[in-house]
Every structure is written in C-alpha cells, then in structure tokens.
Length: 117
Image (cartoon, rainbow, N blue to C red; front, side, top):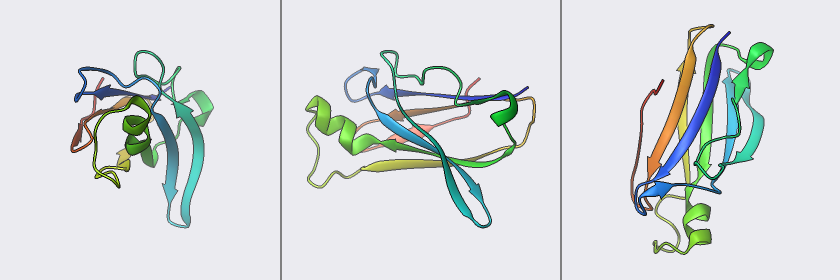
C-alpha cells in the first residue's frame, strides 16, 4: 500500500518549521475536497502519514502551507502583506504502492520542493 508524507524546513532560520499549519486537498474535475488540516511537529513533519491504507488513492492533490502565518508567529521579518502567504504545491501520485514524500523548504521570500523518498 502506498502512503504520503511531508515535512517543512525553515531555511531562513536553519531549522525545522515547527508549528506550520497545512491542508491537504484532493483535486478532481468537479472541484477540490479538503481531506485534512494539520500542524507540523517539532521535527517539521506531519504526525504520521497524511494518506495511507484505504485513504491512499492515486490522483492529483494539493498541499497548502501557511507560510506567512508561520513566519509572523515566530517573529521572522517579512513584508506586509507577506510576499509568500500560502504556498500551494499541486502534485500527482500515480503509483498505487508508492511512497510519496513532498517536502517544502522555505523562507519568507522563496520556496522549493522535490519528490522525496
């Protein structure tokens, strides 16, 4: 069975992004459905898999990370309004047995991602 996980690294401050809110959405032709909302733990990770077992289905998803809110909460200088407020990553999982790990590396001014393992 496949599963999906994520984590966030705060590269502006050189640490895991503890306390960043995020949402997971499933994107379908008739619209998007929010599957869950969470907050990253002390390691900047979700507590457990976001999708696993019967809830894991191949398809197109979005992870929305509340970057602006996170940097405001920890007191990191950013523009007002924040240059990056919500960072949304849209990705497709095609392998029904795959492990998809979607990390976010961010600052108040930039971000990057990749398919991790």
